[in-house]
Amino acid sequence: YLFLNITGRNDISSALPVQNNSFFYPSVNLSFVFNDVLNLPTQLSYGKLRAAYGEVGKDTDPYKTSTTYTSSSGFPLNGQLGYTRSTTLGSSDLRPERTSTIEVGTELKFLENRLGIDFTWYKANSRDQILAVPVSNAVGYTTAITNAGEIENKGIEIILNGTPIRMADFQWNAQINFTRNRNRVVDIAEGIDEIVIGDQFGYSGSTVTMKLIEGAPYGNIYG
Image: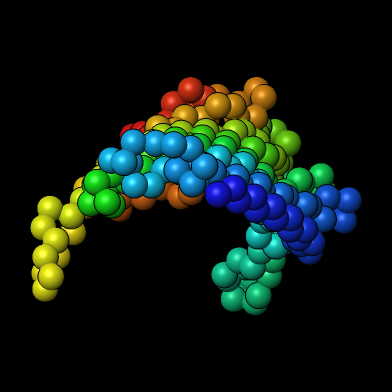
């Protein structure tokens, strides 16, 4: 009636600096099937409570720890291949991204398992996200790679299921579900008002972009 699971994982990534390239992340979840040990009304066929906490670590793409050179077509002369320094400044101090999630829920079944509900509440926070943030052009770059920001997601999930008809040669199972997720940008890099995510998109020549702005939801589109 009582179940406990514990996991642990350690990754080593060559895309991160040597001092930060090894990162450990655990998880633990506990569930309690209380109808096995408690005297409950006969209408309740099954009851379970569960809780979980977990972390996930993530590295980044290669070559983010240093400033690289990129090829430039037709440069420097007569189509000869040449290279120019990237406008993005790398960082030798990058840390792995981390997402921590907490979740609680219950599963209940009634009337000999003909009616059931599964409810979950969760909250996930992603920290130390590796992003290219804007910097002053006076330093010789337009963006710099750094660990910046925190994004929070939280919400609920509800599943209702039932068996309206149960016969010897026919059974009808029905299910309906509802989910709600709310997210917001909790924090971005100090001294920065917004971070543009990805390239411009939409119709050719548009200036529509997706931005990270503190206090606003992730995914808002600005133009």
